[in-house]
Length: 67
Image (cartoon, rainbow, N blue to C red; front, side, top):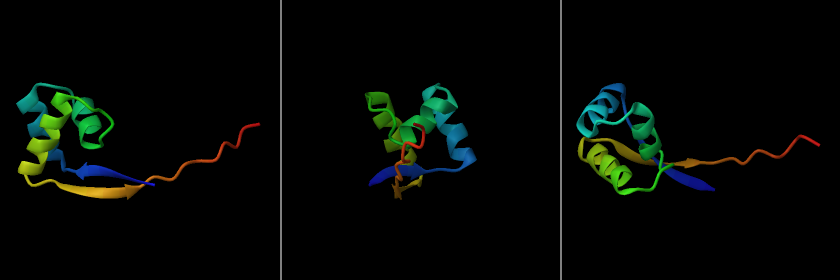
């Protein structure tokens, strides 16, 4: 299973937080596609325009080891 995320650096994070007046957690969740909202879409679009790149990452589901 793959999921897309947007790769960013510390300076880009700082700029996005300032531009959108949100927390770093909001930006992080938007760039990892954990949130789906108009604001998240705007954050992702701006990050891509700033030169960030999308990357597909493999998601490995953990087996339930508790009985």
